[in-house]
Amino acid sequence: MEKINCILLIDDDPVTNYLHESLIHSVLETAQILIARNGEEGLKLVDKGCSDGEAPALILVDLNMPVMDGIGFLKRYKQWIEQYPSSSVVAVLTTSTNPRDIEKVAQLEIAPLLPKPLQEEHLQTLVETYWQRKSSRSNL
Image 1: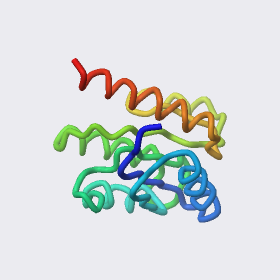
Image 2: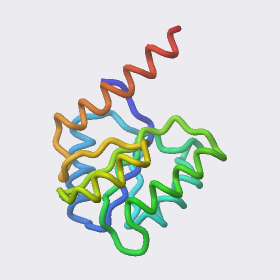
Image 3: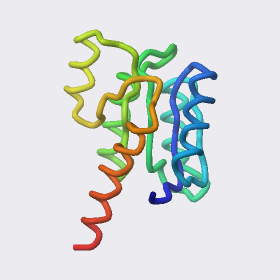
Image 4: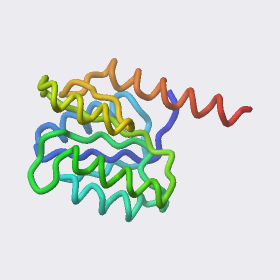
């Protein structure tokens, strides 16, 4: 599977972050994993960039968090990418089955919704879908 240089996990639960970080390391080759505890911290890390100065290639954001939730992060991130175009892939992780939550994410049109905790097959599908698409575009 293709190497992803930097991944950002945004979730207020340290156990979930540990599980997701372990899963990522077991499935993907990655140079760096950044962790934020809420959307506000996540935006700061996106703005700061990874050790190579680039925005994270993959951002996994929880929906329900204190300070700034996933919807707040997605709205602000959408504004950020209008100013600083990015090829980051964003996915929302949630346990919510609330139709309102699902509709809010869908309206923003920037992130697929995945069940939480992240499973290996979802991570592989996400990476294969987006990185194969990027690779095929760069070969044109």
